[in-house]
Image (cartoon, rainbow over all chains, first blue to last red; front, side, top):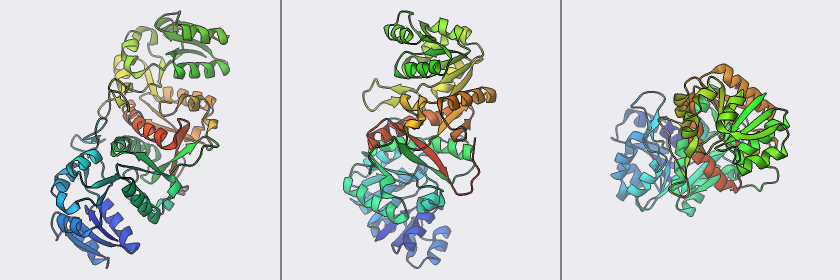
Length: 222
Length: 222
């Protein structure tokens, strides 16, 4: 498959590297095609290249948004034509560091970044995923001592099914990937970030995740 | 021990029943001493009685806030003298159902209900706990198929230690109770509620909880 990965930070590079390792073609998009981090990444990965946001979004059959929360909307609003009706995997979090640490969320409770993206790109099939774990865990869930869970939110069932398949390619257990429902349920996935920060503080590491445990005899979910 | 349980709903009654079962004395407080639900509960439990908020808070060595989020502040502000410098376990969630379902939070992101309580009762030792699970799970964590986790937030370490001991009495595993830090970390615990609602939808049951899984070799936390 051809993927666009938008954002050249740790999350973008980590996902892009996983995708090329799995045999996919990746264009890593940033503001300019000569972004040093992207160029360096592309030089190290034969199936990867460094390019602009617009060129990446045109190339990708699927677009993965790994941009910092603060710039997501400005970048994506300019890509409505290139993204079109593609699946847009939204990994971002609306973290606002402008008031210092700990961060707050720039949107929450009655709206979410994923919903803002869906409104800005109404034809796109936005699927919120992977935003609840550290980048290392995203692509290597086996780093943890037990199987843990991921969560999907989005309006298009077929798009969620395709993202689920990709997450299974990444090493996640299908039965531990929970479909939370429409894109509005991304509010819960994004608001979990403050809980995630609590847990990072309590455990002293970003390498953790949660597993949903049910009562004995409850049927498995998908 | 002598406990005040404020609130006669499912959470208050469930916790009050667990406390008397463990041998504690409980006064279940409500607006009036003749609240039918409280009177009926007290008639069934020899170590329990039904009384007013103020009488319960005077009697309790520890006060457990099980009130609905919308009335918490109004009730507690009137109890500053009775609560004094006691440990106040805050089980409540700032759920706002006034706009219909799904609920939103009446406070979040830059503040929390627990912080509002702490500011209203500055001498009290507020400890946020148990708000992340269904009432049945609060007092019977063994209902789930594996051990799961709880979270504490509060400014007073000794108060948190005493709440931790009570939770162990309830059946929780000490090493699975995570101290998130100061009362401000209650923001994360309360904002998790939208995630909890997602998970209830995805699993089709309120009987679930999360377990924090770490990388191999990470030391246990307390």
